Image 1 (cartoon, one colour):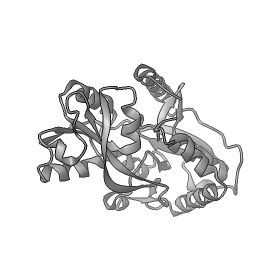
Image 2: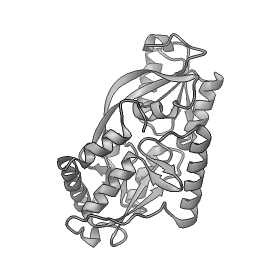
Image 3: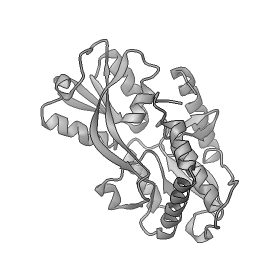
Image 4: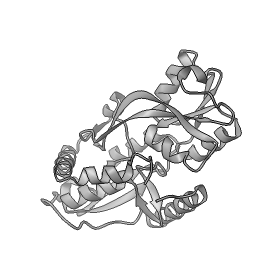
Length: 277
C-alpha cells in the first residue's frame, strides 16, 4: 500500500474523528480463539482495550477509518488467540510517556505503539517479552545538507524530537558531545510539523525509530534517512504493574504466533526490504 501525504493526513483525520465519536477505533472480533481469557484480566469482559499513539507507521496508523499497522495486526492476532475482541483506542497526549498513566488509571488494558522497553518505563509498568528490535534513524534535508552521512555531518544542526520519544536520549547525547547545536521538541502528534520544519530548513534533522522515520519521509523527496544510530531498542507491550495474568497470557500468545509462522508473516508484510508495504 502507498499513501500520499494528503491521503495519509485524511485517513488519520477520519480515524481520529471516529475515535472521538465512539470512544475507540473500530472494534474487531476474534475469529480463531485459543484458550479463553479469564474475564477478570480485562476491563471489559470479552474485550481487550489497547492504546496506541497515532500516527506511528508502520506500527500504528489509520486506514479508511480503521486502525491498522503491524502493532494493531499483531494485537488482533493475539486477541484471536485469547478469544476476545480487540478495541484499539487513540492516545492523544503531547508527551508519549503519558500513555503509561492510562494503565494505572484503568483506562485501557495494554499499550502497544512501537514502544521501547526502558528501565524508567519498566519501573511503572510491566512489559511483555520483546517482540522486535530497531535502531534510531536520522532524517535530513538532502537539498540543504546533501553530504550528511555520519554524525560528524550533523554539527551545527538543530534536532527535532517528539516529546517522550526515546530518540530524546540520542539527541541529548549528541548535544552533550557537541555533535548537534540544539534540540527542538514537538508534541507527540506533531511529527508532521517537525518534518515540515525539516523541509523548510527551520531544523536540520529529525530523529525517530528507523522504520517509522523511513516510512514518514517516503512522500517527501527532499528528505531522506541519512544514517542509523545503533541503539538496539527492544519493543514490548505494556501492562499495568499488577496485571501479571494478562501479561503472561499475551506472552503465551506471542510464543504461539512465532511458532505457527503468523508473526513472521506480519513482519514480512509491514517491514519489507523496500521499507514500506
